[in-house]
Amino acid sequence: MAFTQMQTDLRFMAAAERYARRGLGEVWPNPPVAALIVRENENGQHVVVGRGRTSKPGGPHAEVNALTMAGTAAKGATCYVTLEPCSHYGRTPPCSVALVEAGIKRVVIGMRDPNPRVAGRGIKMLEEAGVEVEVGVHEVACQELYSGFIMRITQHRPKVLLKLAISKDGFIGKKGEGQVRISNPLSMRHVHGFRSTYDAIMVGIGTALADDPQLTCRLPGMAERSPVRVIIDSDARLPLASKLVMTAAEVPVWLVCSSTAPAERIEALSKAGVLIIRVPTTDCGIEPSVVTSALSTRGITRLMVEGGSRIASAFLKAGLVDDMCIVTGDIEVGEGGIPVLHDLRLEDVVADPSFAKVEAGVIGSDQFIYLRRIGA
Picture 1: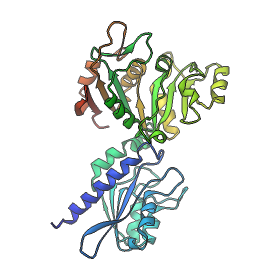
Picture 2: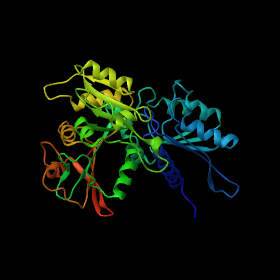
Picture 3: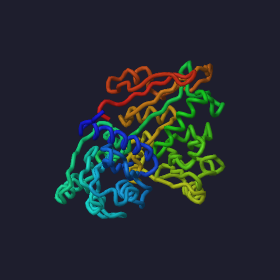
């Protein structure tokens, strides 16, 4: 079956976009770009001769990795790249220059780079060198892939996912009982998979004290994909003996506290390897917008908020939740249950017309629904 040029472009860009997603949560503050070098073989079939993804900060970009794999086969070939190639000198030379020097004949781009340092300059550099350029192929999917990167540049905050695990009778835990297992093991695997694609995960000090969580990715072979663990803790009360502090040397822990937090607590936590982020407070405590701005400044593009109820409500009321994943287990907590939200009704949040249902289904005995803010 013969494919048109458009069909071929869509096919390879979709493959590049799927490949790029493997870098989510791994290469921040850089976007997870993927590049495929494609050319016709002796039978007239289009084949991939090189592929690459963005390396961790300081390493080669996707295009360079793909060109390295392709070698001399890159000359006269087409490069499919999910984001506009860079045109500036930073830790690495411009990818646009590398593509030209390798003799790439045609470059197909998923979307333009919103970064002002690039913003069309990479495309211009390629075109001025005589390279044929096609922009906007599989663009909607690429825009969703880079939504966190885009938000950090345009709104100075990361994309925020609020994840809620609730019992059959509508609670997130039970007072005085620490961590209560609500989701089934299969759901937990999905949650850990989510964690691996986010730059940072956040809970409030209430959850940290009650549950003593690890907040890591505990899927086999995925420990290195654990996100930065962020704790909102105005008075720096996080115990030195907590699992979070005890593992701070293995997986980063960032503690966001008030500028007036006790100096001795700050010193002790810092010595234990916790990064302290001091922020101003209001009568309501630490504002979510201040937190997201501080995280954005430090390179975070995707933030997963796991609670508790006060943090969840605060982010919802601040309009900072872009996606919501709500998992409902089949157990009942009963008397003494902790409400899902502090001062909001979950039914009202789910029915909010500013959110659209993206997906719903079952994971074993659990039910889930995934919502996205319209326009996010």
